[in-house]
Length: 472
Image 1 (cartoon, rainbow, N blue to C red):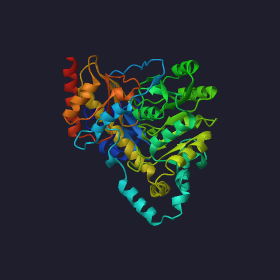
Image 2 (cartoon, one colour):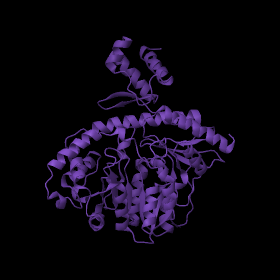
Image 3 (cartoon, rainbow, N blue to C red):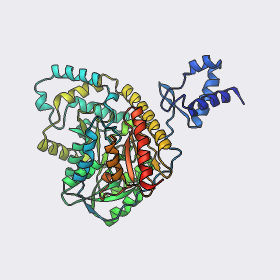
Image 4 (cartoon, one colour):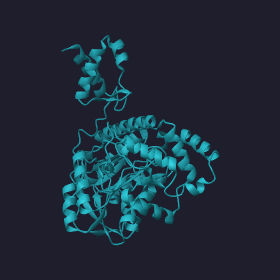
């Protein structure tokens, strides 16, 4: 065995026994040279070998890190198989009842839809807010009405450009969070009674928006790793008068799925042929665990039919409720709807975010945030592997902060939700992600909070409850 193989095997053992945990930085090349009395070429060969084994990954300008090995001992859930008929929604009351439980700070927040606020540069944002408020031109209260602050829209357009998407700031409308953007987009491209294609399972906020607007849905089968089934969508477009699609192509909530680039191109081409707009909910795109960032469908849109929705809530500024939509040829309609509903988004918050983006630091924050989320997710999945019974299936995410779990036959997610809440643990049961309240054997767990002893105990308690439910 060569020297670099010996070094690689030694580091692999330290990763295997938990000395080096997922998301942690391995010794720098210089440090490894000193501690192992090896040449730089030997260390680099060892690290290359560990990369080829999938144990570490190189991060630009940062070094080498232990790769998050997510759910490798658990089977993947099957592709969803929803019905092929249109559905009228009556889900909001049911969803509100479930989600109210996530507000209690004494509850272990595995059912929360939000990451920990401790992961964000809130002090730096507060300073930017104070400065922008002192310097705020009073006329901004008028000029920053929809479509929004010019500098913020320019900074967002620059973020698009860095992701390979060239668009004008004039196409961007600032909104009060991504949910308002989704509502405005649906209103711009549909009328009450129209049919909207959604994923199965789907983000419950989208289901609520569709219900509120009097729309119907058709659920499209969705793969837990590769996202929405484009072939099934093509069949649905032939059978039904679909007026819009609402999809999450990057790190989908709740599955964590990411649509491969070739299928993404196929999807955009298919919808262009049918002249059906795509509302692309892309709020988790910045939270990828690997490199590079996945492309938005917007980057493939030549017809202006993709309305790309995103927000700062998940990646920078929770609580600020500032989002946007790059609405393509529907931008003017979205802008008018924004003006007619809420006039504009909070002016000082727009100015503060524009200042923060202009002065840098965002990419540094994102690198740290991604590392934290990847590490937390890996530790959560390791706990699930330790404590959950045989027969559990898990969708391994490549970004975001959610884990989707299919429980063994006989388990009941709604009953588990009630039992867990009585023990101070929240979970998100599968039926809230379904137009027909399906997925009753599935749960979604949040990995967006620092992994603590309390979280570990909560997962162990869930495992005991699941065993008790079905006798495993």
